[in-house]
Length: 410
Image 1 (tube, helix red, strand yellow):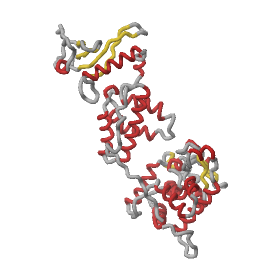
Image 2 (tube, helix red, strand yellow):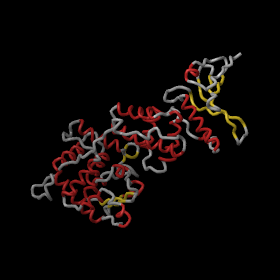
Image 3 (cartoon, rainbow, N blue to C red):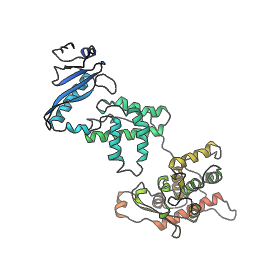
């Protein structure tokens, strides 16, 4: 027969709970200083805080497990259990407690709701967030209960990424964690986000703003290295060159479809769902760009720049550029595909292109007022600017002694 446990008259204490021993049957001990709170001791010695309450819908007694006793990341201290019970009582009085059966209880369950309700409907490339969730968040925090999740545990999730040297990626993880738990707080799943106070600098996520752009004398080495790379596919080569000549974002380039290319009009239409600014866009095509695109006809029926399994990814382009430096095909300071945008913007100004036209060539916003009142796409002006840029690049790639350069911008 199980021994009857007498609770302290002034309420439970940590010392009392720690000394509770398992018996042949599980048993509960009430906390006399917090009405309704009990410690349930299992036959294996596991101790959990529980509360029995009346369900008004069924008029039956139900048990709510508040959490396991302890001071670990996924456990509840005695004081935390008392606070958790007060929160549960308020939800019960408001008729919200039974709804918690559909509320995520672990970080992994929260991530699933967050991805389905917040990410999928609003992001054009939700798979990038899904990858962070699967590989960086759930692997560290997935099994931890939301009710006991601490800021220390969330910080550790970021530190795991920092310690493996992925500083830039750690910044993305930090941002998504803050969004994730802000979402949970807004939904009422948690009282306060454990990621509220996260600061990238405090976590070692300090990124230097990139200012790399290709100088005049670097244009030919980069172009030639891309052209002569023995293991680089033609779509990858032409994609990198097209980035150099157009200044479009890699995401816009990689989603380019043949149905949106008009070689006769020399225009490339980008639907709003493919742009960062969520506004449709027309890129004027120069002769050099048209030639690069024509070389890819017949490879894939849908995508202009196809990979082995459909689209090329931005990782493929970034890796292709890195290999040019790793194999010493390029000996200049390292550059990335995104640096081509900065290169074009810098040179266009040196080629006497007006600043607002140079900005529009990159599909940058000219400000809220312009967005509302100025619907001019400056297509003709942008065409002239990109023609000027293409001629300048080709002049560096294929120098001609009988041609006077537009301007020495080095």
